[in-house]
Each structure stands twice: as structure tokens, then as C-alpha cells.
Amino acid sequence: MVKHYLEFEKPLIELEGEIENLKRFSKGKPAHFSQHLKTLEEKLHRLQKEIFSNLKGWQVTQLARHIDRPKASHYIQWMLENFLELHGDRNYGDDPAILAGLAKLNGKTVTVIAHQKGADAKEMAYRNFGMPHPEGYRKALRLMKMAEVFKKPILTMIDTPGAFPGVGAEERGQAEAIARNLKMMAMLRTPIIATVIGEGGSGGALAIGMGDRVLMLEHSIYSVISPEGCAAILWKDGEKGKEAAAESLKLTAADLSRLGVIDEIVKEPLGGAHRNPKVMAETLKEVIVRHLREVEKMEVEELLSLRYEKFRKMGTFMDDGGG
Image 1: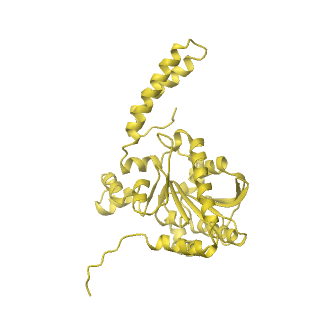
Image 2: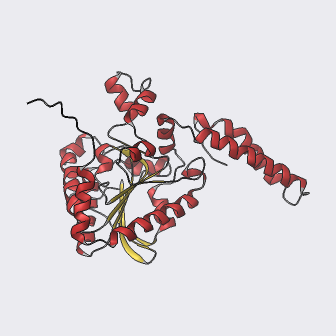
Image 3: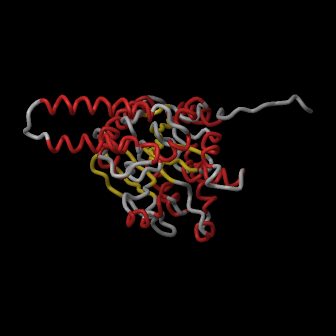
């Protein structure tokens, strides 16, 4: 049973609790309990489909931030083998908000770079809630350059509210670190697969998000600003306007697929990745392997040309014909 329920999930609580109780009670009991359990599970499935097939932008945002949602460390554990974490930017220090290193994907060595939010209160504080400092992005860049030298593909996992906006981060060049990553990722002579696994916030997400293929989990978000931040600017109230802002920002995977910003939506288990995280990891692994196989067939110059065109053509521009 799920540990934490969002407001729109509350109709599921009683039914899921009844199913859990019946499962415990029916162990070793007559078969008629099995039929009753099957009926309840079918009813739950119908209710889940009804709720999760009609989610609004703000509800998707809540799912993307769900406390139980699998973090990058979980996907690394379940998708990859022999993960070796690497630390430090060789300039200032190490940033735990960026989890990075080398691993094996089906026996192939890959470079992994991910935002790590933390799975509990202690780790969240240690990881700064997944909000990197400049040294985090410089660590990521160091590993990207190493991947290029040794001709290893790069997998990134995006899950951040945004780059940390503190005074120290600004003093150490937060904007420059993000800009340098964008410049270098555009030119890296090795395949890059980027996946938004939860929250993709602003330049903090984009700094490790410029991939040859950009994937999004079904209930993740990717946006230039949070709904609360947008509402605070446009309506002077970050709370009251957040639902309208979430709709206007077009931040869901479905929206961004229609706009041509991402390449594929990765289907989540019914109710979200947190309801069956290992199945989610298996699904994501299959999709990443497929895309990686496709881009690795390309010559480097073709890869760079397609990467350039991919990001160059994003957006719509209108010309009023004026002089």
C-alpha cells in the first residue's frame, strides 16, 4: 500500500486498505476469498484509470514531486551494474546534489550523471533537495569530457526544482557553469540520452538535459519555471494561481511531446512510478537501450549535426512582415 496519498488520490485509500486487509486475512483460507479479492482489485483498477487518465497540469506536478517517487539512485541500482561514483569538480569541491559516475548497462560502460533529491529528510538535506551548486555542474562537465575522451555514451537523469539560487552559488558562477555545460553538451562527440524522471526545473535541469534523445516519464514535468514561481510573477500569488500557471506552462510530457521538445514519453505503471518502481525501472531501461542502440549507429559528425538541428528548430517564430 502506498505510504503517502495526494489529495486527488484519496478516493483510493479505503479501497486499497480493504484489499491489503483481505490479502492478510485470506492467507490459507477458502477460495471464495480469492474471488472477492479479484472483484476488489478490478474495482480499484477501474478507479485508478478514471483518476489518472484525466490529470491536470498541477496534479501531474504533484506526482512528479511525490515523496515516494523513485530517485536517480534507485534507477541506477535497478537498471545498471557496477556503479562507481566519482566525486568533485577538481576546482572547488563535491556537490552531493549531482550523483555521477561510471556503470554498466547490459555489459556496456556508460557515464551516468543525475540529479539526486534524496529519499528521506536526512538525505534531502544532504543532497540540497536536488538543487545543484556550480561545482555540481562542473563535476558533471568533468565527467562528460572524460566520456568523450574514452568514447563512452552519457546517460543523464533530470530531477530538480532548479539550480540552487543561494548567494554562495551565485558568487561561484552558477549561470556561467550552466551556460558552459550547454555549450559543451552541444559539441560533445559522444551519444547523450537525457531522461526527465521527476521534476525538470529551468536551467538547473537543462544543464544536463541537452541530449541526442530527450525522454520523459509519463508523470514528470519540464518547465522554465515552477507553477508557483510563474503564478507569483503573473498573478502576485504563488499559491492561488499555481493551478492556472501549471496549465499555461504546458509542462507535462504530453504537452512537450506535442510541442516537439521531447522524443518519447515513457509509460509509467498505473498510478505513477512510485506504485511499482522496479517495473518502472525495467521499462525505462528498455527504452534507453533502444534509443542508445539507434544513436550509436551514427557517425559522430551526423550525430552532432542532428543534435544541432534538434535544438535549433525548437519554438515557433512569427514575422509580422515589418521592415
